[in-house]
Structure formats: C-alpha cells, structure tokens
Image 1 (cartoon, rainbow, N blue to C red):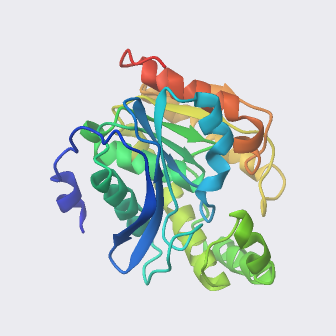
Image 2 (image 1 turned 180 degrees about the horizontal axis):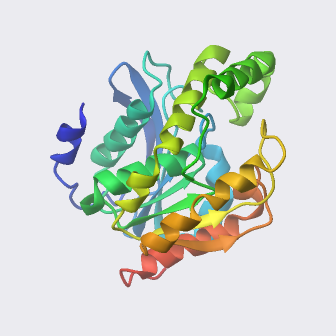
Length: 276
C-alpha cells in the first residue's frame, strides 16, 4: 500500500461500541490488537521502537473509562507475528490497518519514542483523519546520519543480542535478529534527521511530554541535546507545544510520568471541546 492509496482511503465511520481483542491479519503478518470500545474519544497508542503495548497500562488507567483505548503491537513486537518487512513504512501500514479494521474516526494518537515518530508522520500525511497527537519524549529532529554512528548502533545491538530472548517477554525487544534491530534503529535515526519539514507541516494539535536525562546507548548529553532541536520548530509551528517537562528519562517516562501524558492527551481532546 503506497502513500497515495492511504491518502485516498475513506475516513472510517462510526466506531463499534463493543470491546474486541484479537489478531488482525495484514500482509504477511498479524497484529495483536485490543479495543475497549465504547462511545468515548478514541485514543490509539503507538509503542516505542521494539516495545509492546503493555507499557501503556498506567496511561490508560490515568485517562479512565471516558476514552476509548486502542492498543496494538506492531509487526514482530509484543504478541504480533513476524514479517518480511520491518520498515517504518510497514509500521505506518500497521496503523492504517488498525484504524480501518476498527473503524476508528479521528482518534488522538499517543506515541512513545518511535511511536511518536509514527504519530508525527501520520499527522502530517492525514490531518483529516485524526484529532491530534501526543509525543512522549519525541519526536525530535536529530539523528545520526554518518556511517560511524550507524556502526555504533550495529555494535550496540550485537553486544545486546544475548539479552534479547530474556527481555522480549517484558516487551523490551522484538522478535527480530540483532541485525534487524540495528537496521530499524538506523532507519529511525535517518528519519529523525530529516524530520523538520514533517513537523513544520503538521496542522493538528501536537503536544510534547519531554523527558529528562539520557537513554540507553547515549553518551554525555546526547539525549538532552536532541531534545533542544525541537525549539526552533516550536517557534515556527504553533500547532506544536510542550505540555510538560518531566523528571523521568526516556525509558521510564510511561511508568513514572503517566499522569503528564494523560494530561497532554486531555489537552488535545479539549481543543475540539471533547473533555473527558
């Protein structure tokens, strides 16, 4: 499915009222999806790069029953099946498949890290298909584009490969090889480096919840430096705002700062006078 096909896709109609949990077939894989149903404003959660949807539980609990909560695991993450395509565009198609299958109209997208990158691209491409978005520590227009940085990523995942079977049940790694993890991370860095025009083009409310400190694999103040790159974009595009700067770091933000993420989601809902 190409961008033109998705752009011309019909906007989903009324949401189903009944809850549903199951496997959604798409292309050569199947996605684990959970939908609480109900009449509330739909919120679709987009996971971190190799994470599963379980990490969203504190945010969902903080928002409560007034919202309709849709979670899913991207291909090879969580309970979803493997695929031959682990590209960013594959994850974009995963989101499109979930929205279409569950007939989700104008949701709020809430993304963490890589999921926030998906949310930003979706907001730029399909402003008519969502209410707005929230980015939990991302996305920022900075990434490693040089071969030295890419080799550093490959070495990091090569060193971590023995850990992956153990952290996978915790939703911290995908069912990919170490090399596939690395290539996905490299693609993410390249997409972040080219992000400014995407962010400039967003015309729906986008709220940032900005973490503090450093992330796994970063050195010195690399993560904090990346966060600063959003400031020029914020000054140009008033649809983008920082809702909160929190104490949690990149890896703990959903667990420690779920209240701030829930508050940012309510801010986006309030922009269309839908207050829960």
